[in-house]
Image (cartoon, rainbow, N blue to C red; front, top):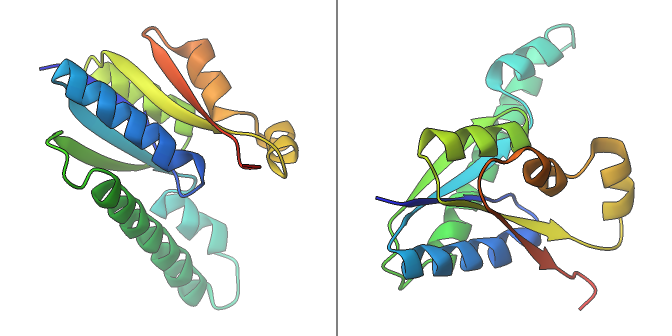
Length: 154
């Protein structure tokens, strides 16, 4: 079976990328692997708050935030794909988003990777500080990458 890997987060670009990936999956008869990457693993959270007073409360708060984010992603996927016959699986990972998307694509020998990109506002500053996930995926991928632009000013 063919696979399409799509990267989603909790930002505005995710629904457009997910809808495009679902359409591509449907046309190709492919399974959709939805990948959401959180920036911190549970071990990193534990290490980060290990010296903070009230660290157990801080750790629980950060874990609860990640759990809520994962539920939000699942809801987004379910809502976006409602009524679609596309088979999909959700992968919630932690670490480097570009690296995990590429690894997920390699693990299922994906036909393509779909990822959204945003424009305008605070995005420019964020990209200067952290870089663009979509640019890194395009630069490093060994398979087709579909970048779905989302103009937030519309």
